[in-house]
Image (cartoon, rainbow, N blue to C red; front, side, top):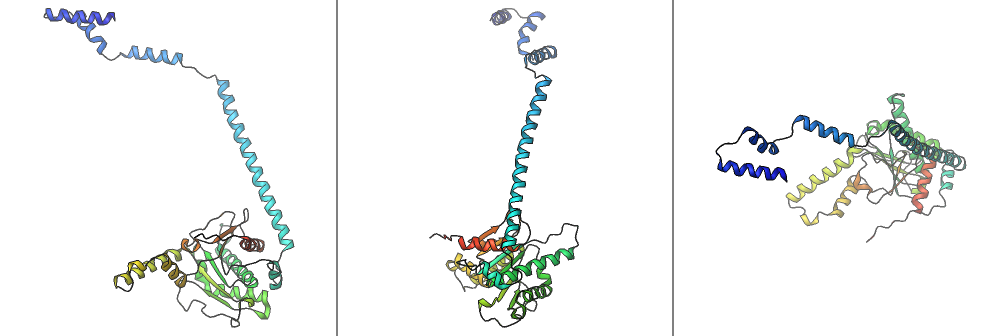
Length: 333
């Protein structure tokens, strides 16, 4: 307050006197100037001196506490994962002893005889496991053998339609070899009573598709006749694009009106030209990874997988059928 009164007096005197002394000018401008470096350094030292500082022993104890909490969480989660893997492994071993097909259709039908219903169309997601330690040819042979095993199980269970999804589409490149492997596998199960087999793939030339059933002529579902469709990540996108182009051309030519294009029409066209919606999808991996599976076809599909199981096993196939039989289909209104 004193400094303000002094400055006011200096200003009043400046009105009556034409000039001010050097000291008076400095006193008048000093409050308006920024602080000097010495004053700033002194202020920072004063703030730093008043700031509370942690001792090294406290910092050490705090870090050790964080490390202890992290270690406890890691140990608990690791024990949970190990116990879960052990439980699932033990369950699979018990089921493999109690339920095993022995490549006999009668035993497969005995395992599912108490089920109220079976899927009319079953779809599976397979992965070509090439970890670098085995050659690509060995991985392909293993993939074909897994597909042939699933086809044999479906044939024995009486499931008429099977779609096999493999993301890269490598199975479609070796359809004759795959057809031979599947037919040999069916013969190993059925013997001379080998059922009919149809192997086809969308967007593949008709000569490469198995349009006719191999083996005996199909007569009924009970004899294990099976129709297999090979699909990949390209099918869903290409089918929707082709259908969109077709509907656009028909609308431009006046063959169809805009009001006729609805979800029912799209669903019908995709089902007839590509594939019907599967009743169930079995994912043979520890987690549910659809890997680009055509999304339009699985809107109302039951999806099944077994945790901590990344291989194709008969027990997983059997558990999936039991899950489907107990599932409640509530489609709403």
